[in-house]
Length: 236
Length: 168
Image 1: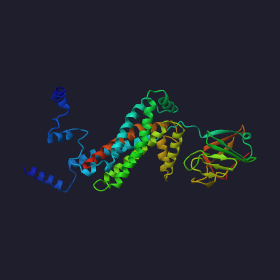
Image 2: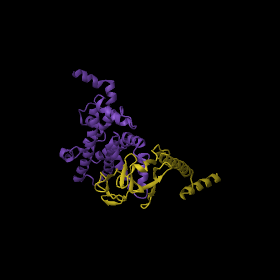
Image 3: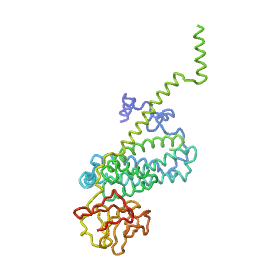
Image 4: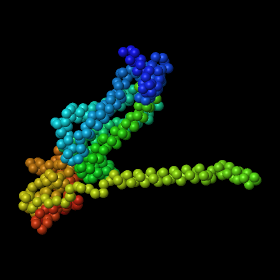
């Protein structure tokens, strides 16, 4: 077994992927972090205080974990869901009663979505109470607020997709709230969101595109910047 | 020799006084072209996002004949979200059932004689005026006409004043 791993670590394939030596010296241990795409954003040093679990409660990491769960389950749900009326409702029912593990995936997506809103909010509270919004991290707080809004918008756009009574009235009330904006801006925003004057087929497709592409991509880009800045400022 | 020296000097002076250099000219032209293309594509995208043709149900509909509505009655047409009110013998008007607060469908409460919204508790009288709750405005009154077959025609695209009625 030992010789197998020694041979593996010496092989051309392994060494083409991991171009540093085994993490046996301080130098190669550092290289293992610097030369890894996923780890390279880590800071060179971290305060002992900030790695303590009850300093961060791991809430940012939990939010990201939930986002990963939502991306994977969401991509799988997309294989059976067609965003057209009334087909969307029947596809949702098929996912519950016909598709293998469909109910499980749908519930996982639903509960992870609820949890993500809660966890992101708790993460914001933690950052507030530890004063982590203070200089030099003010701008990262702003990005965090935009990410909170993105999370809520993702949750809201996903709400219409089952195309049931709850979804219909939820979106009716929500877009009517937008309509309360003055000088006709509200009417315009509501019209653009719904792709019309009523919650109909156009609205369903628009919310679907926002939910499955535009908002997740925006959130991913912002998360990249958010994590990079956290680490450059000495966080974990 | 003498001439080129002079030109060198001239060019030097030009740069110093920040006159139009070739580099600056090309930056302006190139940057301007990119700017025009960027603004143009933003305008086109904004236009693209707003649909020009909508397959939405007609705002005009037949509510039924006069005899379907007894005097002193408020009838909700759930599909069209409109109340047909026959206050007295020949006194008709059409009220929107869409609550002006957040767009839920209000109901007629016969025993209390009010129109009430189930979502956030707004209350209106039979004329659509706000009695209580968060509703910021009265219920909208729509144009109500009678066609040749004595059918009531409601036009939800045409809002009329609060004193307009249909006399039959």
